[in-house]
Image (cartoon, rainbow, N blue to C red):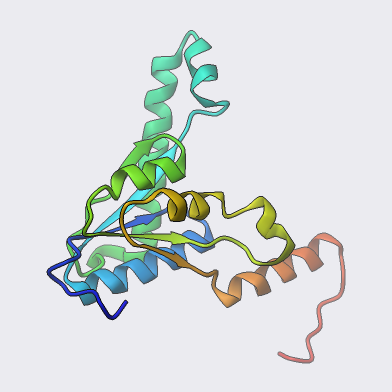
Length: 176
């Protein structure tokens, strides 16, 4: 990252979906945008349930698409408000809602050579085989630099607690 100057990176585009990984990526993207003097472009991509063919078959497709767009806009606004509050991120921000697959939508949005695309890297371990498709797509297809942000260390602890609760296992409180 040391080769970047404020004049070469006009936008920091970041994928946001509300997950812990995307919030971690959004925090990193915000810090980078501040440091580089760039604009922050949080992007939430959405697809109709069942994909576009299923949405086209529905007789009320137009009404449903409007509602899904509204829900996507509401979700992005909620994440941004929760993270930044009324103060905002401290850099110019342009939230974007894109209809389409997340990987393709992020690559299409970060279409300038001087953009920087930030994505969550997904989970670690065995679950990695079933996650991380978006980050892999972006790394393979983006025409700009891509930063894949590893998950927060707290995420694995949270998943461990959730797993223990699911299986009704006792918590180890010796470390508390």
